[in-house]
Image 1: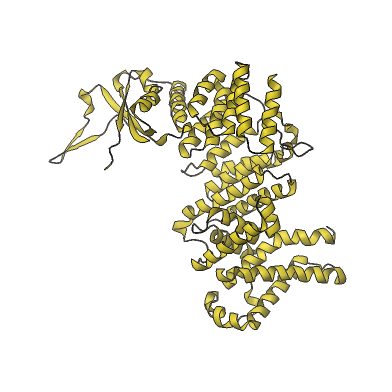
Image 2: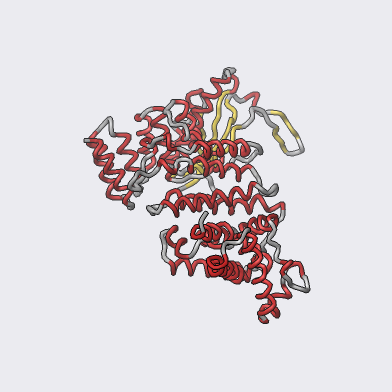
Length: 113
Length: 409
C-alpha cells in the first residue's frame, strides 16, 4: 500500500450561496464518500477543508494575499489515503463530490522524505 | 439480606476497597500482602459471624479487623519492618492502626489511584483487565478465568507477571500529575471499555458473571465521574455508551440463554432507567472540544435505544459511523456502517459499498452480504450465508446464520 494525497480543487467563483439545508446535503455527500474510504480501512487522514483565502510568502519577505485571484480553481481541501496503486487511488477518487461541482481531484503519491 | 448472601455481597463491594487502601499504604510492591489481609478479614467474618451474630455495622467491623490485621502484620513481620517500613508512604515513624485510613474519602481516593496504577501503559492490556477484576472488583481467580473464557493457570500467570511488572517499574499508586491525567485516562478508559465488552459480548451463558463484568465496568467508570480531576467528557461519553448497551441486557437473551438479535428484541424489556441515566451522561459529555470514539459510539447506541425504524434514525447512525470510521477503523464498524447505509439509502447502494469492503475472512461480512441479497437474489444470498456458516466460530453465530438461511426458504 502506498499513500496518496488527494487535493480537491474547485472554482470558487461558481460556488452558489447555499441554504443551511443545502450545505448539510453537501456535507452529507462528503461524509458518505469519505466514510466509504474509511470503511475500507484506507483513510490515513481525513485532512481538512481549506479557507478560500490565504497568504503566500516569497523570498525577500514578500507577503501577498492570494495567489488565487488569477487562478480559477483553488485548493479547497485535502485528504490522505492508502491505495495499492494509482488505479485504485483513481477508483477511490471517482466518487468524490467535488467532481459533481465542477471541480477536480489531484492525486499525488507520497514520495517520502 | 440474610447471612449467607451478606458475606459474598460485602466481599464484592469491600474487598477492592480494603485492598486499595492497604496497597496504597504499603506501596505497590506489597499489593499481594494487601490482598491477603483483605482475604483474611473475610475469613475472620465467616468464622465469627455465624456464632456471635452479624455485627450492627458489618462494614465497620470489616474495616476495624482489616486495620488491626494490617497493624499486626506491620509490627510482627521483621522482614517487613526492615525492608518496607522505611519506605512506607509519608515517611512516618510509628505505624499504628490510625494510619490505616479506611474513611469513605480515602477509600474512594485509593480506588481511583489503584485504577490508574493498574491501567499503567507498561502493563499489557489483558493483564490490566485481570488485575482490575481481581484487585478492584474482588473477583476470584476462578471467576476471572470463567469470565475471560480462560483457565486458572493462565490467569494466575498473567496476574503474577503483571504484579512483577508493577514492582519492577516501581509504579506509584497515585493519580498522575494534572498535565498527564487526560492522556493516562485514555488507557484507563480503554481498559474499562474492554472490561465492559468482555461482559457484553462474552460467549459464556452464565448471565450472572456477564452482568457482573458490565456492572463493575460501570461502577469503576462512575468512580471517575465523582472526582473533579477525572470527570472529563470522554469518561461521561463512555458511561453513556455503557448505560445504553446495558439497558438491553434483559432483552438480549431468550429463556434458553441464546442471543436475541436487536431487531427481534422486545423493547418493553429495555431498562428505561438506565437509558435515562445514559442521556444524563451524554449531556455531561457534550462539553469540551475533543470528540472521542466514545462520544460517537454513545451517539450510535443512543439511536439504538429508539426501536422505531425511521429514516432519521438510520441516517443519523450512518453519519455517526462515517465519523467513527474516520477516528478509528474496525471491521465491525465498517460492516455496521454498511448495514446502516442499507437502512438509510436502500440495499442497492449498500451492496455496492459492501462489495468494496472485501473482508473475505470475516463471517459477518458474508452474513451482511447474505442479508443484503435476501430480497434480490436468493441463490446469491444462500451462497453468501453458506460461506458465512463455514467461517463462523461461535455456536451463537452459527445458530443465527442458520436462522437467516431458514428465513430464505
